[in-house]
Image 1 (cartoon, rainbow, N blue to C red):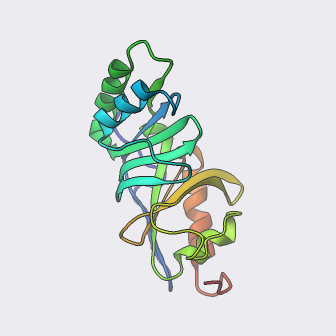
Image 2 (image 1 turned 90 degrees about the horizontal axis):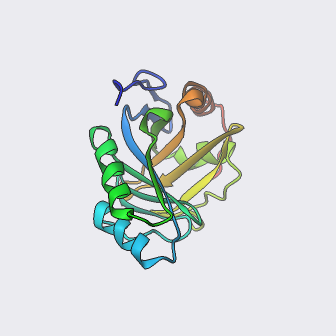
Length: 189
């Protein structure tokens, strides 16, 4: 694994109603397989400690957990230094199954968005209903934000985590920062 490089070098922004921070190097492992295969599900749970989350859900705490990404894809988040070993253990556990585990940590950027205005900020750029009654703790959406692919979830601590490709990480941070500036967004929630 290379030395960790982040999209924004650890940038932080504190706006009037929310704060945005680069989470720095975050371990991320893409897992693909057949959700209905008990051997696949057991292998994932044995390594991650989480059962396969249902559609559009996150299981875990803060930056350590398992996200549903599509009907046959999940994203494991973990400490950066553990990602390669965890991907390797998953591949071993899969044995002859038609399944995949790949460390994508260096290809992704991760941000934390917190504060009273976090929902409205994300709603401004993503076609997602982020009203509290529609999007709660543990909910995940894989969508577009400011015209780039992104995924985000709401943690138990009330903060959102957002991941995107590292190649657009600086753009995403700048978009979030500009959209969170004083007077930049309408009230919504």
